[in-house]
Amino acid sequence: MDTENHAPPTIGFYIKLALLSWFSMIGFDFFLHAGLLSQVYSQPSPFLLPLDLAFAYIPIGYISFLIFGVFLLWLMLKLKLQRWKQGFIFGLQVGSLTWGAFSLGLFSIATVPPTLLVAWFLGQTIELGIGGGVIGYGMTQRSLRRLFVPVFFFVIVSVVIAIVLQNIGFAQVPVITNGS
Image (tube, rainbow, N blue to C red):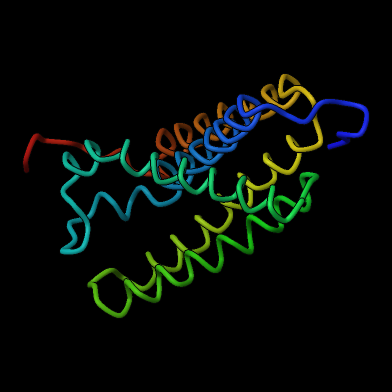
């Protein structure tokens, strides 16, 4: 961002940018988990929580994405990374390192199926790439209004695709039965 002729961004700007990044990651996450990976979560597993409990804990998982968004923003500010492409690539790098480490750690101590670990690794890496791309683009702007529209559109399209996948039978709609 050109700060020679303009005042540097405020803390409010950075808070909004982190929230937009988070919102974009939630949109992709919905597509990934409610769409592409939904069948995995509908099967009983000694590793995964029962569906009713898992759905109750979804907000905690989304808070973890907010932490990742703030982490990406902080790193990108320190490294002076700007532009959507730089942010996207950096997000992919951070995602592959963190989720690669998480996946290997879980594989070493848990009963999670390796295919699910690979899916989480790939999905969460892409998710952080998307979040980094949003941050990178936002860092080149003085106002986030122009960025809000494509992020909002992306989230809506992601949700709609997940719902379509469920309706055509590709993705399974989980049935929650209060404790069973």
